Each structure stands twice: as structure tokens, then as C-alpha cells.
Image (cartoon, rainbow, N blue to C red; front, side, top):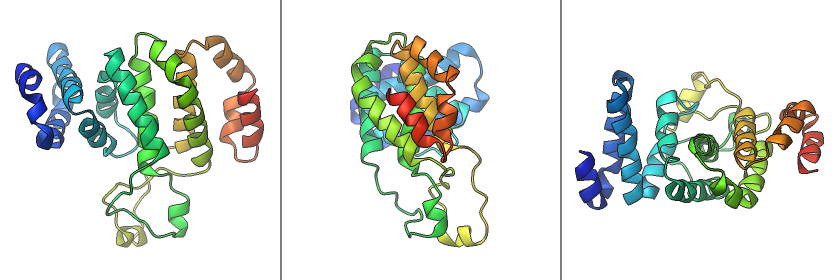
Length: 232
């Protein structure tokens, strides 16, 4: 199958979502090391052929991100060149999120307290891809783009809750659909901290923790103080 994906993957654009769905579905039952490695390698091979399709499919997974989805994202960080391209694409996803069909779009009270799904998924994906990088070069090169985008994402998710599954309808909301558990702002901070650390700023990260910067940033009442500390 790996040979077929390598040789013929360029002609499989329409099949990418189905292939990824099959690989993802079998991950919980395949724990043997070499077989599991094949699953994640297959995703990386597909991404070399159809990067946008793979990214879009993985971003459609519900939040909070499960360990299998996280592992698939990390597979895209194994190749530095591919990882750089994927990180650039994720930055754009945060800057210009797609309009999600079938999701809640009206400005209801619950909408205003939910984080936007695609930017948050892209933020979590950045954390996983960056954590898999063996070298800091890609992160250092992209830091001028990653830092402001992730800092803005931290501010935008302040005080918000995780988004609902993409297929949730307004009627399900009225029936009291339970919101997923998780803190979008904390997830955004986690991604920003990992980018700073991987970019070679270990001393800075330690100093920020010592000054309780992230605690200040996460609290709506002290958010501006934390941002000032971070920027300084």
C-alpha cells in the first residue's frame, strides 16, 4: 500500500478523505509498532501529494483532539520541508478560517462563547507538528509569522469554550447538547509556548513561567498584563 501511495498517490485526490478515515478508524486497534508506523507514514506520503486535502481532512476532526489525531499531525513534522509547508498552511487557516457549513452561524448567546473551530484546530495542529520537529530551523524561520498569529489566537479564545461538533444543529443546542470539555485559551497558550521553546528560546520560556506570564494571559482580568510581559 505504501508503494501504491508513493507511485500513484498523485491521482488519488478524491480518495484522500476516505483513505484518512480508514487509517484513523484502525489506529485504536493497531498498536504493534511497525504496523502503526506504517499508518502514520501513509499520512505523510499522502500529504506530499495532496497537502491541502490532508490538512483539511485532519482539521475536520472534533475537538478536543484525541491522541490518534495528534499522532497523525505529528507524522507531518518528520520531514522538515513538509513540516514548513504544513505550518505555513496552518498559519493561513488561523488567519482566514473557512466558513463551516451545517454549523451554528447565527449570533446567539452560545455562539459568542464558543471558539471558532478551524482556527483552534489549526492551533492544536501547530503544537503537534512543532513537537515532532527534530530541528528548530523551521520554527525559527517562521517565528515572525507564528508568534503574532498565535498571540492573537490566545486573545481571541480568552474566556471561550470549545466549539461544538461540526454537525451540531441549532435544535440540538436547544435540547441541551453537552459542550466538549477543554479550555481553548490554554490550548492556544500551549501552542505558543511550544513554538517559543522549539525556536530556541528555552531561557525565555523559563523566565515566562517564573513570572507566571501564562497564568496572567489566561485570566481575562489580567490578560493585558500578561501580554505586556510577553511582548517585553
